[in-house]
Image (cartoon, rainbow, N blue to C red):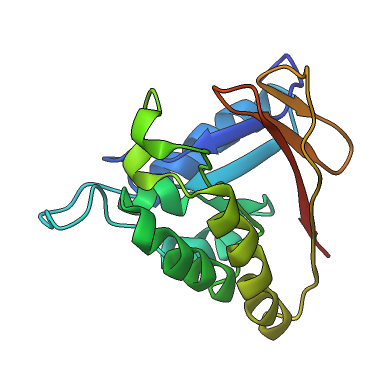
Length: 178
């Protein structure tokens, strides 16, 4: 909490929503206001998916805290085909942002390939999210740029993220809500 570096605080798979809020309070109490809450799924008795994405946590967290809430539908389901529908549902529930895994060749990913979208799927999802964001009374800004070379694994800039894939290809993406 004392570093003042931005923190994406991810809810543990066995943690209650109030546990996440208390962990955030600890960071805030040490002087770091740069905290983002992340819902990424919890363990339940359900075995059809990796985790159960707890979408009712989104409005609860927003009601109980001033902090932004992002959702990770990649880890929340563990299944590539379910990432897009759950991302749309998360936006409809009021999420302030999304964390989505993307890989050029998920079959050779070092981890989580089964839940990673292909870049084309990610670009399509960004287009499909627009009406959900509009229905929530917000604006979605995104840009998928041309291939870039020679970057680090990822680099953050003011309004964009540059991802580098294992084969060296880089894709730039940018999206924000207003």
